Image (cartoon, rainbow, N blue to C red; front, side, top):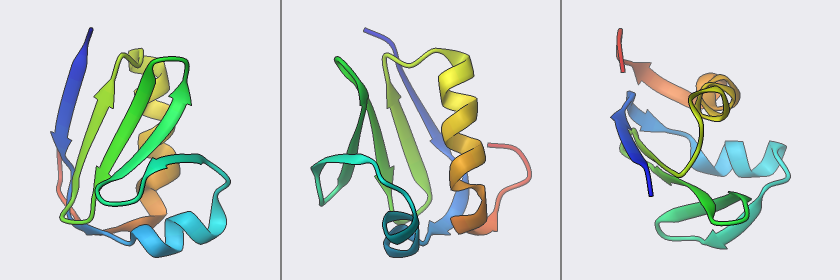
Length: 77
């Protein structure tokens, strides 16, 4: 299993993200989203995201999707 954790922003507007995107929510606190069979994305409101068994390309797609909801994004995650 591959796990990749990134600190990408001061905070993430999770409520706004959830309103605009149809994703399968496994757990609400912390927000755990299912990307596929045995693949998960954990998004913490304080700007941390963890990818469980995603490829680099899949991670990039999630980061791009989350970009509009990042508050005070860090220069390099």
